[in-house]
Length: 400
Image (tube, rainbow, N blue to C red; front, side, top):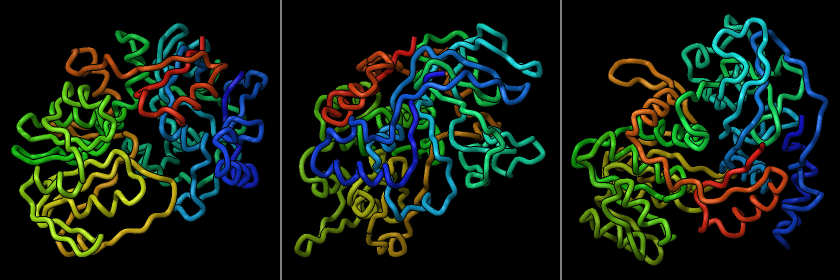
């Protein structure tokens, strides 16, 4: 098994953090904690596991976080015990080449995508009766055993490699979909999960910050689920404006963001030196970027009783003024990954909803994949994403 992984040794991460201040070439050097390794093919650790041969995989923002060693020392992740190794690649499609004797849903030759990838009860080898409350109901991304030790002691691999092994509950059939559609299920699911956290009401004014992969699909799903709202987009890359409008954006905000928000929402803008505040603003904001001072600003761009859905993130501690939260009664909702959704009173997995929409041709899937590289050229792919992110939406590694 050949697989790309992140070796989480503090010394290695620290070296890259220091060197990257002087040159971005450090990310691609031999000192990087992201390495391409080969292991003897592991045996299936249990009879309900499968072996998957990868066809192609997408590069996600979380993969970029590992590659750039962007994790900060003061985040909530730091106290958690973590494995020495994290296998990269979860936006993936592949073919099952081996099944355990107790596998019920799949057979050799079935095409699948990877549904679960965050450390959860099932992936740690726990029995169903040992699952935490979140995993029992299907919210695997909110697993309460995240920091507990795994019972699986073999290399599993993931999407960035030739093969990986997984419990059958980790993968999902993509029968009826193309390889590209199957690869896109995971990032589409992230966007749908975020929108389902807070579906706007009719006539709401909605701001989507960022028109990357996740932001573009937030636009698409907001318009699909609530066509009577108005969607505004804040994206400094003009190359993505046309695609945003194709997916449902009504207006692109240009220029000074505070003035643009004020003009779009008829809000009153007040300023004292560099300190700015709006009275009025958007009903709902989906922050799909989550960097720098943006959190501080988004709180000031919401109208009273407005809602911020926090989708984008940075793995470092940040500072913000909390005044608007209590002063104006704001609601802040975190949206991570995907899991259990309640749609029309019925529980469904986000992945199943996306697959159904794709099969019914209810959503646009063309135009998202912009670049392809052979797996062995993964450093070139990451280099493109670091140096020319404006030119990309989804970069794919071909594993065959």
